[in-house]
Image: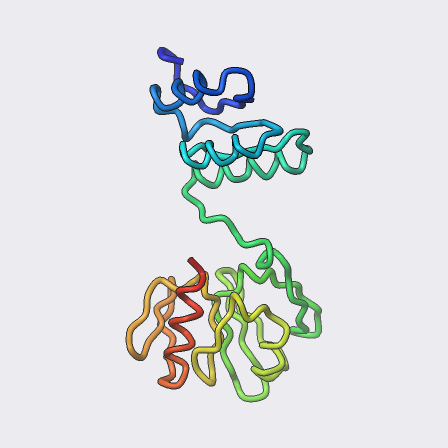
Length: 189
């Protein structure tokens, strides 16, 4: 390991705990290590060391795939998507039923008797009230910051006294919603 670059190390520290922990710290390979063990104390020690992940034995293929997905996301610098946002909402648009993944929604805008659901790829015009669409999406991840706008909190970059700045749009922030927005946005972290 001293002379070759390492992508990933799967190791069970049960046999020689102290040697393994010292080795990881000495060579600074925490970001390439995944512990596999039956002992929960190894998960705690791994967390303290800053390792990639901990796989409790016996682990399933699904749990291993989740670890590999986390590794790939870290490598690419992608923020993990909350499992609740992987769900979708069905809407009727242009005489068709469309499924929109919640994580893809950037904001929702009122348009009279309709709402416009904006994603990075499409805009959907749906016959619905803001209240009706708001009841179909998780309030933990979406916030109605103005009478005409619902935003995906994951899309927020920053905000000012009267504006919420998304990745590609500025949305008005109502005075009455400002404190609620601050609480909702800060609770994401």
